[in-house]
Length: 504
Picture 1 (cartoon, rainbow, N blue to C red):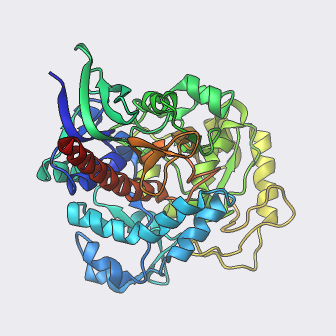
Picture 2: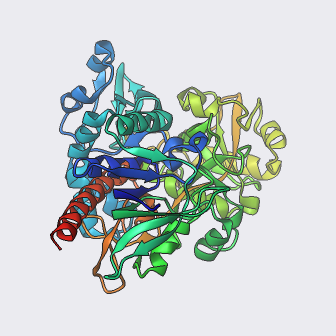
């Protein structure tokens, strides 16, 4: 017997669960089909820090969203406003002006409203003091336009989403990979083919289908085809289940490919990490305090500007730079002055690739860096640091280097105070930027830019928002903004479709 649901959502991460909630506001029967088992629930969203890049006019505007409020902390908190105009500028700047203007305008205008909607659904938020602020002159000063995250990070995000789905009467079915889409005689998408492990394929009919199954970053062959040689060797930060089948099923049906297909979000990732995400450590395998030190390859040579911008605006592209280095390996270096400023959770996590020594040469020998090359690089760097500018990690302080390439634009301090520390990192891919083209209502567009009836999409499977890079926290925010829009539109379409069917 063929099952029927008003709306089927394919994928159980943040975007899919946001879409399911929005659809449930319109219709009664909503089904979420998740490829993974419950032990891998949440897709890539589970492996995030739970950070949402949202807009706000003041700290006071965010207070009603906070799960807990520490008045002593709040009195010492300096949180500058983050406006839609600033969000738009950050999107345009990080993507080199290529982000889809229509979708980007929706993202930045609806971020604040969508956060409040998520909070109403049951998501719990906190100010990310540990990740996004430094103590300066007795104040907690937030930086980089990012302040709000879910309680308990990505783990908490998915736990809260699933609890909210259950409370709303949404059915979530695990171990249910979708392998194809079905259309009716008019060409409208009317269901999916699901292939549960060890069981017969199932045909599940629906009034509308929302695709939120992620990109192809966990597929080594597709990474090599679209991202280039060597990308099959990248580590996968998150779920091993994002292998692209749903994305390519939509393309085979006539959906339009869109966005930066040779681009991806990739970060500095601990060299001791497993091939796929670690469900216990999740995002703690990232190493994101590099703006405070220097980054070298195995030859001891610097190859990027560690202080080009706040890490929120560089970390998602620096993984690709590490991939270009010998053996795809790099080392982040700090000394006794900067080590106390590192993110403690990331740099002291169990099994972290951490090396410590009293001299630069000894550090190189322990870490596997060319000693002569590293000594020369550190000496040259130290001599180039501007001495007449005050160091301030909470602003772009302009304390850079002079006369070396690549220069360091901000937060340059000599590595001259033992002990010295090195952390070995490689490239960790988060998600791919190429995907499907959608309209503002989340409708998937065909190759003639026409909506494909009954088919919607959201999340990392959507292309056109991110090129080359992205502002930290924009991924979860986009997933919820367009998940909400796609779910709402899918529910409305399904309801109207059923009304027409009954009338005929």
